[in-house]
Length: 239
Image (cartoon, rainbow, N blue to C red):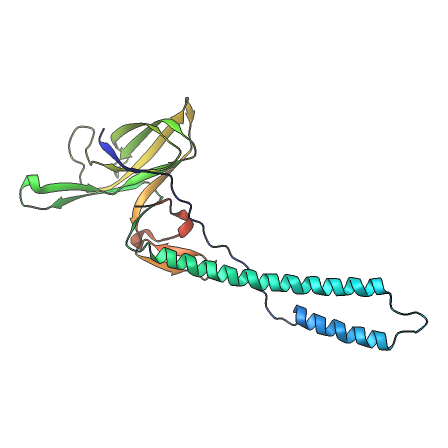
């Protein structure tokens, strides 16, 4: 068929860290409000009219509001700590991906010839993996590969493919039976089921060179070298 399926699996979910705003002390913390409230309460009780004492229900309501504020502040502090731990955990997990191949959104296939020996028989065509993600099962998937000038050089019918992420390796052969020259190629995916189009996302191969902790949006980014950086939640598959 020209294209061999080397790995077909449902991509594990990789979630991005969520940003949680931490509580800061700006003069309106629950502790300061409690202190101010108690000071005012004591002064009010000392100076209240004996014939018209403070309403107990009003006092209870004010105390409940202060306690609610204190609870919210403690919750925000706890969430901030949990968020920090999640960020640290994601950074550690992401660092384990350094040096590994990943499938990320893109439509590139790179072709190169490795000359192991001087003879023609010693040449080996190497292509980078490619793939796609289907939103649902497809009974027909056709891959179209084009060169850098937009010319169609190969079409492959993969048949039925299940929903999820699938990755493949092109053998580097053109439609006329010759070997594809070294260079960069693009591919497109035409998936359908019962004659209806199935949405797909094309995936390209890259290597993770490093991990970046972004201070802009508190996200963990992966350094893909010349391909730039992407959020860890854009990774569809780890090879």
